[in-house]
Length: 432
Ligand SMILES: *Cc1c(COP(=O)(O)O)cnc(C)c1O
Image (cartoon, rainbow, N blue to C red; front, side):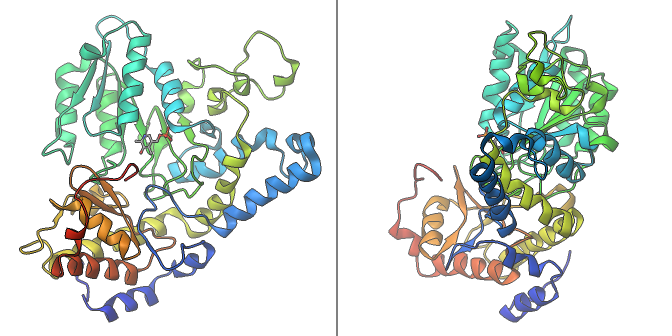
C-alpha cells in the first residue's frame, strides 16, 4: 500500500506533482463548492461547451444544411463520436456508436443477444446492478413470453456490497447449459467494485454463453479492452465520468463478430448510410454498431461529448486511471490513518482496497449517512447518498485535487466532532 503524508502540506505536494493538474482549468467548476459527484453527473468542460456552441451555430447558420455541412456533418455524428470513443474501450472505430440512451440501448442489445433456445433460456445477472437494468431485463424476458421469476437469475452479494467473481463463475459452471446470456455492470454503482471483465468473459465463453457489460460507471475512469477480451456487447452512459451533460446521448459497443445479427429495435437511423435516403421499406442494416441506432441523433445532447472526448484523447485514459486510483487510495488512506474508521467516528469503507477491484469512486458507509450527507452539502461539499448507508465520493482525475480530498476528509471528521449531522433528518431527499 502507498504511504501518504496525512497533513495538508502532503495534499498540496501531491497536487504540485500531478501531471494532469492543468486539466482542471478546462472545466467549469461550481463556485465555492467541492464537487465530488462526477460519477453521477460529470462537470461541463470548456471544450464541451465549445462543441455544443459549434452545433448551435451550425443550426443558426445552416438550418437543415447542418446535416451535410462539410466541416461537421450531423448525419455522421454518431459514427464520428463512436470512432473517437472507441480507444476508451479498446474497440475498433465501427464497433462503437454514440446513440440513444443507456436503458434503451440495453433493451435493443439484450433483445438482440438474448435468444432463448432449447434448455438455454435464462439470463444471469446480479442483485446489485442498477435497478433500471434489472427492469429492462425483466421486460426483455416477458417479451420472449417467458417468466422473469424463473428466467432471470440474480447472483447474490456478500453483505449487499460486493459480488464475488467466484460466485458468478460457480453459477456459470453449475447452470451453464440453462443460461443464454449474462449481463453485468463493470463497476457497481454503490460500492464502486470493479469486476474482472476479462476473466468473466473467458468463463462465459467456455460455457458457450454470450456476455455483455453495462459500463456506465467505468467509462472514462477505467480503461477497457473489449476486443482483446472478446466481450460480445456493451453499453454505457455518457453523463457520468464522460462529462457529456445531463441526459447526454449514450453509447453502445457490438463486437464485429456479431455485425450480422439483426437489431431487435430497428429504426431508420440504423440503415446503410449511403442508401438511407432512398426511403425504401425493406430494412438494410448498416454494417457496424451503427446498425443498432434507432432515431435521428439528439444533436444538442450529443455535442458536448465531442469536446470531452478531445480532453480524454489528450490526457490519455491510462493517466486518468492512474490519478483516479491515487486519489481514491489517498482518500481511503486518510480515512483510516486519521482514525475515522474507528470510534467515535465509525465510518466504514465499502469499496475494495485492491486497486484492480476499484472503479472511480469510494463508498463511505455510516449509520447516519443520509444526515452526514446533508451536513456535507451545507459545508459546500457535493457527494451523493445511496440508501441505506452510503456516501459516495468521486474525486475525478480531470478536475479534482488532492487538497479537495483532504478537505472532504477533514469535514467528515469535523461533522462528527461537533455533531453537525444531528441538525438534519437521517433520510434522503427526492433526488439523493
Ligand atoms: C447511470 C446508469 C443508468 C442510467 O440509465 P439512463 O437510461 O441513462 O437513465 C443505467 N444503468 C446503469 C448501470 C447506470 O449506472
